[in-house]
Length: 361
Ligand code: OGA
Ligand code: NI
Image 1 (cartoon, rainbow, N blue to C red):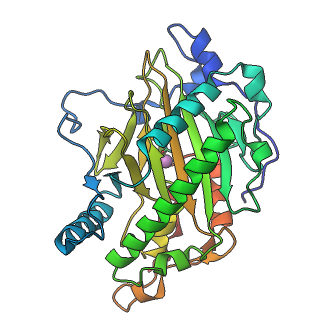
Image 2 (cartoon, helix red, strand yellow; image 1 turned 135 degrees about the horizontal axis):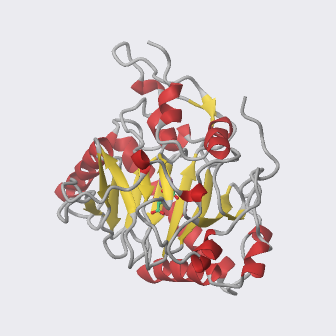
């Protein structure tokens, strides 16, 4: 039985502090079993030419219908074949993207006692954190993070957002507003591509009362990047994720069959990925994809993951039009509140949760 934990099972250690004191080794509880360590084999599929699709949204709904049709097709194929793609000309200002990332970088470089005022607990995860999951003795990931709610309004609380750097709250407001718009646009494109009414997925998410949260990841440099991970393999439990990666340091890897592809971020692109709830709503027409983060021996990395999620207390199940005799519903209804307890209790575990949901056939 999953229980809602009030506190962490062990004293919290900030990875940033470890990074400053560990010169050539890392503590045992960050060392992954050998099968989970990042491989740096030269024969790996991960060559310079391999990347997730990059899609230019520039001409969408413009005068040329062929351009719109081509963009829709590219998105459809990326959703089916990859579950991950980058978008450019998405309408969010490059200045805002840079400002958001650099504001958060400054936050992580504030003195520790300032950050500690926002220390989080596993009850809601909001605030400054260093682990995902509450199992005692777990092998931990090499990262700190900040987690906050942007929507629904009932959960949005400026007091739980950092007050420093001084522009932080204002920047999050603006960034959140733009990203919600962009996510809503993409969700409509997904609905159209699935052959549904353009509002179908949005309605499946609960209409107006959807959720949106921001998780800012801080991956400090690590003396032994060969032994650990910045974020263990997982699929995102929510609806859809819009990731703003570091502009200087790669680290995100996406699973493609049995290989791990290192994403080469395009400047001022967002990385979009399908989460478990869209897998459920689309009755597995679209699948969430496992991903993980590797770390670096001399460079820190900052990324902003914006999660666009269904309303948390309504049952999420395959959309009726996508359930047929040939394609019976693969998943029983479950609320997102119930669903996300799994990752919040056990930590990142590949795709084991959404796989285990499958109704017996
Ligand atoms: C996440 C995530 C990837 C990254 O926060 O869920 O997958 O590159 N982040 O930081
Ligand atoms: Ni993720």
